[in-house]
Each structure stands twice: as C-alpha cells, then as structure tokens.
Length: 333
Ligand code: NAP
Image (tube, rainbow, N blue to C red):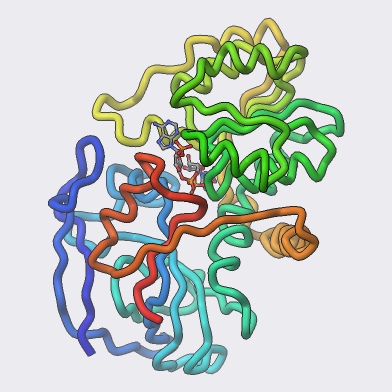
C-alpha cells in the first residue's frame, strides 16, 4: 500500500504556497504493538494549521520534514489494539497523509456506528465545542443581550451565533459577501448580518446595536475587533476565539487593538480561551449540539473539496473566505 504524504518544506511567509510543502510517496506504515493503521477518509481544514506550521502554539510547531498536522477522520484498516477493530471509524490528528499508524491513546476517538461523518466533522466537531464553551462559559450570555459574531458564516462562528439565538439573544453576524450574509439571516436565524467587504462595519454596528454590544465573539481580530470594541456596552465581554485576519501576517506580532481603552470605560472584559481546556467536557457540548441540530435549531454547512493532492489549496480557501461553512477535504470514500 502506497502512502502519499505532505511534508513541511519550510515555514511559510504570508499566505501559504504549495512550495511550502513537499508531496511525497512512501510505503504505508505497519502498526506496532497496541497501534492501529488508519486510512484517512476526510481531513478537517482549520485556520490554526497555519499557526502550527509557523511556530510553537499550544502544540509544538510542526518540524521541517514532518507530515503536516491535521485533524481528520479515518477507518481502521489493521488493529493491534483490542479496543479498536477493523472498520471502526475514528477521528484524531491523522495528518496530511493516506495512512497513519497511531496508538489510540494519542487522542484517537471512535465515532458511533452510522454517525454522519460531515456532521461529526462540523457542528459536532472541535468547532461546535469551541462555539459552545466560548459563548456559554466565556461570554456568559443573558437573554435579551446583543451578541455580535465575526467570522459568522464559518464553522465556529455560525454555531456560536445560533447558540446565542437559542439563549434568547439578539444576534448580529459579520461575514464576507452578500451570499454568506443572506445565509446567516435567512437560514441560520441571525437577526442581522454585516458584509464587512462592502459595508462600513463600525457605522453598521452603531446602527444595529444602539445600546452597545454585550458580547463580541471574535474569530477575526484586526479592524473588525477594533470596530466592535468601539461599540461595547457597559460590562461588555469580548470572547477572544481567534484572529484569522492576522494569521498570515509577515510582521509578527501584529499590532494590538487601538480601541482597547473602551474596556476600561465600559468596565468590559476581554478573555481568550482554548477549546483544549474544555475537552474533558466535550461530551456535554456534543450532546447539547446534537440535540439542537436534531431539533433544527442549529443549521450547518459543509464545503467538501476532494483529493489529498489539493490539501494546501484547500487550506488556503479559509484565508480568502472561499469556504462555505466547515472546510473539509475528502481523501478516500
Ligand atoms: P471558518 O470560520 O470556517 O473559516 C475561516 C473564515 O475566516 C473564512 O471563511 C473567512 O470568512 C474568514 N476570514 C478569513 N480571512 C479573513 C480576514 N482577513 N478578515 C475577516 N475574515 C476573514 O474557520 P473556523 O475553523 O471556524 O475558525 C474560525 C476562528 O476560530 C479562527 O480564528 C480559529 O483560529 C478560531 N478557533 C479557535 C479555537 C479556540 O480554541 N480558541 C478553536 C477553533 C477555532 P469570510 O468569508 O466571512 O471572510
């Protein structure tokens, strides 16, 4: 069995290029004692991968010459572990490759038989769990409050906004393009949407949030964060989920928010969090999310591209907003 792999060739500068990686072919590994051989079926594309290949984060940076780290789902092809049998579908850090030999102790989790893969890898995945704990534990919404979400049409933002609606909040999404904004208001039930590519975000926030923003769930950072800080309500909370506008920056660190002193004036709170801290409670989030999806209260979109050879190009889609919902890459049927 041949194993195609994408190896990191150099640390990217600016937007990733195919030449930042080498696409190689080798033999599939043989699982050792206690290990399983996983055939990658679907890869999860995540903005944080741009950071993993650049520098140490909450995980050590991928080394030059190593397989690019990636979440994904796969099927067990061989098993030397009595808890996993051939045919089981698992999710974990499988990497940009066809096959990986892994010890299931390295955070490989079985999906329940028959679980829809696209749902498991979108609204019920790390993205859904991030939205759940970020909004509920860090943002702490109260019914009637005004919640603004950036990156609102994406995998994490779309779920965060819909949970805020479930909790009785007035919810405004910020996204790029008329079609994404239409999806937010017409399909996902947001009260309003701002197209940051064609509208003045600060002026629109003033108009749509006359009493200020109680919770800003931020996936983007940069100018959008500044616009939201300027419109913060008294005791407003900024949930620092991500800052994708900065991830391709060549000058690191990027400039801080200009309007941070509004936190002082408004007795506000800006708090970052990592979903990894909440993984011991993942089942709680998945249970709630699954119930809401089943009840039609959370809508989700997946954008499935095809072919391991397209891994860098598919990851790039996140950075120019071409992904329509959760970006996935189908590697095998
Ligand atoms: P996503 O939102 O599905 O995709 C990324 C989106 O970002 C794109 O669709 C694009 O939407 C938007 N974007 C890209 N460049 C932008 C720019 N310069 N300015 C404004 N918007 C831009 O991705 P995701 O996986 O759900 O991740 C969203 C954020 O959550 C990221 O910042 C990620 O790092 C963060 N995150 C954090 C945690 C945590 O534990 N804290 C966990 C998971 C994810 P438009 O078309 O609307 O521009």
